[in-house]
Image (cartoon, rainbow, N blue to C red; front, top):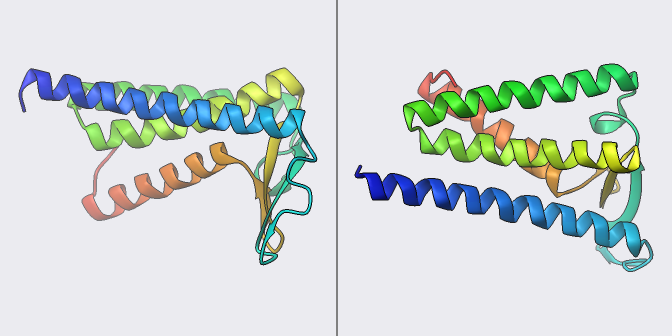
Length: 155
């Protein structure tokens, strides 16, 4: 792969990361400022849009705030280390996946710092309430697990 092709892949990955981060931030800020904007909105009672303040970990798991911040920051620093290692190996698929996870993690951390809670708004009544950042994290982790399992690849 030539140098320009590598550079273009890095630019595209960074653009995707910035776009996803901005989409999450915009959607959270919009629903926080307009909590009734989607009142009554429902897709066959499978999906609803409603503001929810999440003071806990994923799926409502309660944890001490100091421990929560330590875990989140540790995970982000570990992901940045893996990102650095994959830049060295020029493994662009892993770089994209890790970038997506980091975008979600940092956006949720930013919510905690600015508001004291994570802004959730996508409600699946039989499951949970979440946001785009949660989707990024979940999809990214699943993609990494699949890559590790099928390719026996160490991040």
